[in-house]
Image (cartoon, rainbow, N blue to C red; front, side):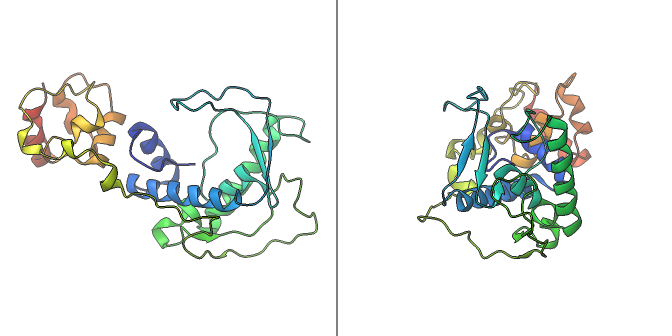
Length: 243
């Protein structure tokens, strides 16, 4: 599922390209996926795993696993509702012969969500929170006699076992990054600067910082002109701050 904040700009850019949406919209999809998951896991569920290390940047121990809810495989439900992309480690699900069978199923679910314009595929049409009710293809619990139904509006927010406050992006940002007028000229390395450092430059917000990071490496800061959204005026404004 997409990111819920701006901590990993490069990944956000990749996810935005997948759904053909903007980075801020991608974060909206990520938060919708988070709410969707919390709602599904508020009821009893089953985890199937070989305890294989999922690694990653998290300090919390992580394992690859299949999560089964009463409505089917959680990963398939996320894809079917346009809230996750088909990406990452491949494994053979229980009851299938090989991982390619599952990939084919996921592609079918993605195409259905895309056709119905729901989740990330429909955010530009105001359909982020429409949910499909087709049973998951791979499921220990879904009845084979269930029939496909049309997506229905999903009440906001998703029901949860207890209230949960998700802080806004602005409340999570470090206030130290805001006084842009104090940023010294000629000090920022275009290839090593963090997102936080880039956003101290007047004229560079979090979306533009993500684009700059995704376009690396640069031969020099002169190549900033090649970044989408940086025209002559923007270039003249930000170039003096880089080495």
